[in-house]
Length: 146
Image 1 (cartoon, helix red, strand yellow):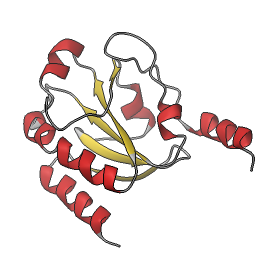
Image 2: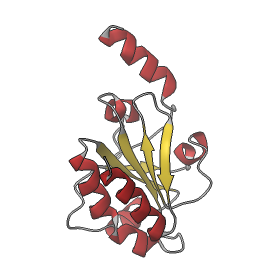
Image 3: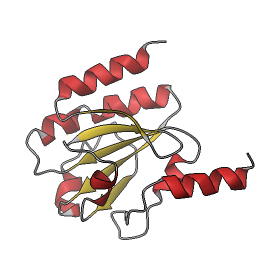
């Protein structure tokens, strides 16, 4: 399959969601996923356990980086400035995106949040963990196994 054909398949598979950068510019989920699997964190500051969940995100990023995966933290249905301020300021370098209406959560058919989602290069969910931090740690452990 040519690169152009792969890009077309990806564009058709990845949910069409109006994600924005914190400054209001467009954020392309398809571009994030184009080189292969990526981790998408769906998070809101008002969710029960959100702060405990956020504290483990630098570990998630580090584990994903060891596998060569990219990632994004998507703040959904939250006030961007307030929500983003509550994310870890150290050890979390992934870009942030804003999904004001929570469309991505619905399109990926995620029923519980906050959640860590592994999305393959075709835009399909391969694994998810959360909202319990213990679930996230089990997922991280599975990534470390050969």
